[in-house]
Length: 234
Image 1 (cartoon, rainbow, N blue to C red):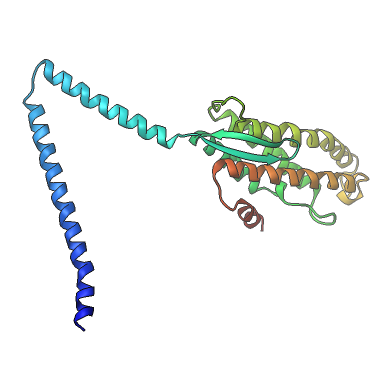
Image 2: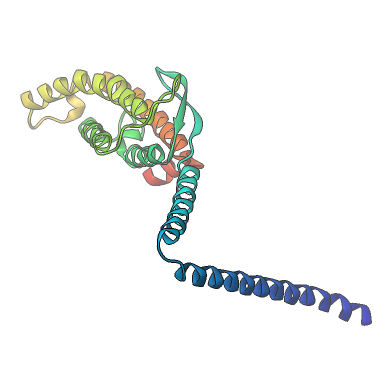
Protein backbone atom coordinates (compact mmCIF):
# COMPACT_ATOMS: atom_id res chain seq x y z
CA UNK A 1 0.00 0.00 0.00
CA UNK A 2 2.85 2.37 0.88
CA UNK A 3 4.52 1.74 -2.45
CA UNK A 4 1.33 2.56 -4.34
CA UNK A 5 1.02 5.90 -2.58
CA UNK A 6 4.64 6.81 -3.25
CA UNK A 7 4.39 5.87 -6.94
CA UNK A 8 1.22 7.88 -7.44
CA UNK A 9 2.55 11.05 -5.81
CA UNK A 10 5.90 11.11 -7.63
CA UNK A 11 4.44 12.13 -11.06
CA UNK A 12 2.41 14.84 -9.33
CA UNK A 13 5.53 16.25 -7.70
CA UNK A 14 7.32 16.25 -11.04
CA UNK A 15 4.41 18.06 -12.66
CA UNK A 16 4.34 20.72 -9.95
CA UNK A 17 8.13 21.10 -10.12
CA UNK A 18 7.97 21.54 -13.89
CA UNK A 19 5.24 24.16 -13.66
CA UNK A 20 7.15 26.03 -10.98
CA UNK A 21 10.28 26.03 -13.11
CA UNK A 22 8.38 27.38 -16.14
CA UNK A 23 6.74 30.06 -14.01
CA UNK A 24 10.06 31.21 -12.58
CA UNK A 25 11.62 31.22 -16.06
CA UNK A 26 8.76 33.34 -17.39
CA UNK A 27 9.14 35.76 -14.49
CA UNK A 28 12.89 36.12 -15.10
CA UNK A 29 12.38 36.69 -18.83
CA UNK A 30 9.64 39.22 -18.10
CA UNK A 31 11.83 41.05 -15.62
CA UNK A 32 14.75 41.20 -18.04
CA UNK A 33 12.45 42.41 -20.80
CA UNK A 34 11.16 45.13 -18.53
CA UNK A 35 14.70 46.23 -17.70
CA UNK A 36 15.64 46.34 -21.39
CA UNK A 37 12.51 48.30 -22.32
CA UNK A 38 13.09 50.75 -19.48
CA UNK A 39 16.72 51.20 -20.50
CA UNK A 40 15.73 51.87 -24.10
CA UNK A 41 13.19 54.49 -23.06
CA UNK A 42 15.95 56.35 -21.24
CA UNK A 43 18.11 56.53 -24.35
CA UNK A 44 17.91 59.61 -26.56
CA UNK A 45 19.62 60.99 -29.59
CA UNK A 46 21.75 58.86 -31.92
CA UNK A 47 21.89 55.87 -29.59
CA UNK A 48 18.10 55.56 -29.65
CA UNK A 49 18.12 55.30 -33.44
CA UNK A 50 20.91 52.72 -33.32
CA UNK A 51 19.04 50.54 -30.84
CA UNK A 52 15.73 50.93 -32.70
CA UNK A 53 17.39 50.00 -36.00
CA UNK A 54 19.01 46.94 -34.45
CA UNK A 55 15.69 45.73 -33.07
CA UNK A 56 13.96 46.33 -36.41
CA UNK A 57 16.71 44.41 -38.21
CA UNK A 58 16.39 41.48 -35.81
CA UNK A 59 12.62 41.40 -36.31
CA UNK A 60 13.01 41.53 -40.10
CA UNK A 61 15.49 38.63 -40.10
CA UNK A 62 13.18 36.58 -37.90
CA UNK A 63 10.21 37.24 -40.19
CA UNK A 64 12.22 36.28 -43.27
CA UNK A 65 13.39 33.08 -41.62
CA UNK A 66 9.84 32.13 -40.67
CA UNK A 67 8.64 32.90 -44.20
CA UNK A 68 11.47 30.88 -45.69
CA UNK A 69 10.50 27.88 -43.61
CA UNK A 70 6.85 28.13 -44.59
CA UNK A 71 7.66 28.60 -48.27
CA UNK A 72 10.40 25.99 -48.52
CA UNK A 73 10.56 23.97 -51.71
CA UNK A 74 9.67 20.31 -51.87
CA UNK A 75 10.52 17.83 -54.62
CA UNK A 76 7.63 15.64 -55.82
CA UNK A 77 7.51 12.98 -58.54
CA UNK A 78 4.31 12.64 -60.58
CA UNK A 79 3.37 10.16 -63.31
CA UNK A 80 0.56 10.91 -65.76
CA UNK A 81 -0.41 9.48 -69.19
CA UNK A 82 1.56 10.69 -72.22
CA UNK A 83 4.17 12.35 -69.97
CA UNK A 84 5.59 9.47 -67.92
CA UNK A 85 7.32 10.48 -64.69
CA UNK A 86 8.50 14.02 -64.08
CA UNK A 87 9.98 15.76 -61.07
CA UNK A 88 8.27 18.86 -59.73
CA UNK A 89 9.57 21.40 -57.23
CA UNK A 90 6.71 23.10 -55.39
CA UNK A 91 6.37 25.79 -52.75
CA UNK A 92 3.31 26.91 -50.81
CA UNK A 93 1.94 28.96 -53.71
CA UNK A 94 2.26 26.00 -56.08
CA UNK A 95 0.63 23.70 -53.53
CA UNK A 96 -2.32 26.08 -53.32
CA UNK A 97 -2.76 26.07 -57.11
CA UNK A 98 -2.45 22.28 -57.17
CA UNK A 99 -5.09 21.99 -54.45
CA UNK A 100 -7.55 24.11 -56.49
CA UNK A 101 -6.86 21.99 -59.57
CA UNK A 102 -7.31 18.78 -57.58
CA UNK A 103 -10.69 19.92 -56.28
CA UNK A 104 -11.84 20.85 -59.79
CA UNK A 105 -10.73 17.58 -61.38
CA UNK A 106 -11.83 15.34 -58.50
CA UNK A 107 -15.36 16.64 -58.07
CA UNK A 108 -16.56 16.53 -61.66
CA UNK A 109 -18.39 13.92 -63.66
CA UNK A 110 -15.55 14.20 -66.15
CA UNK A 111 -13.42 11.88 -63.97
CA UNK A 112 -16.17 9.28 -63.47
CA UNK A 113 -16.16 6.41 -66.02
CA UNK A 114 -19.28 6.40 -68.19
CA UNK A 115 -20.66 2.93 -68.90
CA UNK A 116 -21.84 2.09 -72.40
CA UNK A 117 -25.50 2.15 -71.36
CA UNK A 118 -25.45 4.90 -68.73
CA UNK A 119 -25.48 8.68 -68.68
CA UNK A 120 -25.18 11.08 -71.58
CA UNK A 121 -22.11 11.98 -73.58
CA UNK A 122 -23.36 15.56 -73.76
CA UNK A 123 -23.26 15.91 -69.97
CA UNK A 124 -19.76 14.48 -69.74
CA UNK A 125 -18.61 16.71 -72.59
CA UNK A 126 -20.06 19.80 -70.92
CA UNK A 127 -18.19 18.79 -67.75
CA UNK A 128 -14.94 18.60 -69.70
CA UNK A 129 -15.59 22.02 -71.23
CA UNK A 130 -16.22 23.45 -67.78
CA UNK A 131 -13.03 21.84 -66.44
CA UNK A 132 -11.06 23.36 -69.33
CA UNK A 133 -12.40 26.87 -68.64
CA UNK A 134 -11.97 26.63 -64.86
CA UNK A 135 -8.41 25.32 -65.12
CA UNK A 136 -7.51 28.17 -67.43
CA UNK A 137 -9.04 30.69 -65.02
CA UNK A 138 -7.09 29.21 -62.08
CA UNK A 139 -3.84 29.52 -64.00
CA UNK A 140 -4.58 33.07 -65.11
CA UNK A 141 -5.43 34.11 -61.55
CA UNK A 142 -2.31 32.67 -59.92
CA UNK A 143 1.29 33.84 -59.88
CA UNK A 144 3.62 31.85 -62.16
CA UNK A 145 5.77 29.34 -60.32
CA UNK A 146 9.51 29.91 -60.25
CA UNK A 147 10.98 27.20 -62.47
CA UNK A 148 13.86 25.21 -61.04
CA UNK A 149 16.36 23.89 -63.57
CA UNK A 150 15.46 20.41 -64.77
CA UNK A 151 12.06 20.32 -63.05
CA UNK A 152 8.46 20.97 -64.03
CA UNK A 153 5.91 23.32 -62.48
CA UNK A 154 2.27 22.81 -61.53
CA UNK A 155 1.34 25.07 -64.45
CA UNK A 156 3.10 22.77 -66.92
CA UNK A 157 1.10 19.80 -65.60
CA UNK A 158 -2.17 21.72 -65.91
CA UNK A 159 -1.35 22.87 -69.44
CA UNK A 160 -0.47 19.30 -70.41
CA UNK A 161 -3.91 18.19 -69.22
CA UNK A 162 -5.56 20.92 -71.28
CA UNK A 163 -3.53 20.55 -74.48
CA UNK A 164 -2.89 16.81 -74.54
CA UNK A 165 -6.14 15.48 -73.11
CA UNK A 166 -9.07 17.88 -73.10
CA UNK A 167 -8.43 19.92 -76.23
CA UNK A 168 -7.90 16.99 -78.67
CA UNK A 169 -10.99 15.15 -77.44
CA UNK A 170 -13.27 18.19 -77.45
CA UNK A 171 -12.07 19.51 -80.80
CA UNK A 172 -12.66 16.09 -82.38
CA UNK A 173 -15.91 14.90 -80.83
CA UNK A 174 -17.83 18.03 -79.93
CA UNK A 175 -18.44 19.12 -83.55
CA UNK A 176 -19.59 15.59 -84.44
CA UNK A 177 -22.03 15.37 -81.54
CA UNK A 178 -23.31 18.87 -82.18
CA UNK A 179 -23.85 18.00 -85.84
CA UNK A 180 -25.97 14.99 -84.84
CA UNK A 181 -27.93 17.04 -82.30
CA UNK A 182 -28.60 19.73 -84.89
CA UNK A 183 -29.76 17.21 -87.52
CA UNK A 184 -31.83 15.20 -85.01
CA UNK A 185 -33.08 17.68 -82.36
CA UNK A 186 -35.59 15.19 -80.95
CA UNK A 187 -33.56 12.03 -81.49
CA UNK A 188 -32.01 10.09 -78.59
CA UNK A 189 -28.26 10.28 -78.20
CA UNK A 190 -28.10 6.50 -78.44
CA UNK A 191 -29.11 6.81 -82.10
CA UNK A 192 -25.89 8.66 -82.94
CA UNK A 193 -23.80 6.37 -85.17
CA UNK A 194 -20.58 7.41 -83.40
CA UNK A 195 -22.01 6.87 -79.92
CA UNK A 196 -20.03 3.74 -79.04
CA UNK A 197 -16.77 5.04 -80.51
CA UNK A 198 -17.08 8.37 -78.71
CA UNK A 199 -17.88 6.66 -75.40
CA UNK A 200 -14.80 4.48 -75.70
CA UNK A 201 -12.62 7.53 -76.34
CA UNK A 202 -14.36 9.39 -73.52
CA UNK A 203 -13.56 6.59 -71.07
CA UNK A 204 -9.90 6.79 -72.06
CA UNK A 205 -9.82 10.56 -71.45
CA UNK A 206 -11.61 10.16 -68.13
CA UNK A 207 -9.02 7.65 -66.95
CA UNK A 208 -6.31 10.10 -67.91
CA UNK A 209 -8.02 13.02 -66.12
CA UNK A 210 -8.28 10.81 -63.05
CA UNK A 211 -4.50 10.33 -63.20
CA UNK A 212 -4.01 14.09 -63.46
CA UNK A 213 -6.24 14.57 -60.42
CA UNK A 214 -3.98 12.23 -58.46
CA UNK A 215 -0.97 14.15 -59.75
CA UNK A 216 -2.38 17.46 -58.53
CA UNK A 217 -3.12 15.78 -55.20
CA UNK A 218 0.52 14.74 -54.84
CA UNK A 219 1.70 18.25 -55.59
CA UNK A 220 -0.76 19.67 -53.06
CA UNK A 221 0.26 17.17 -50.40
CA UNK A 222 -3.16 15.46 -50.27
CA UNK A 223 -3.11 12.02 -48.67
CA UNK A 224 -5.31 9.12 -49.84
CA UNK A 225 -6.56 11.14 -52.79
CA UNK A 226 -8.06 8.15 -54.61
CA UNK A 227 -10.42 7.55 -51.71
CA UNK A 228 -11.40 11.23 -51.67
CA UNK A 229 -12.22 11.12 -55.38
CA UNK A 230 -14.34 7.99 -54.97
CA UNK A 231 -16.28 9.58 -52.12
CA UNK A 232 -16.84 12.85 -53.97
CA UNK A 233 -18.34 11.01 -56.94
CA UNK A 234 -20.38 8.44 -54.99
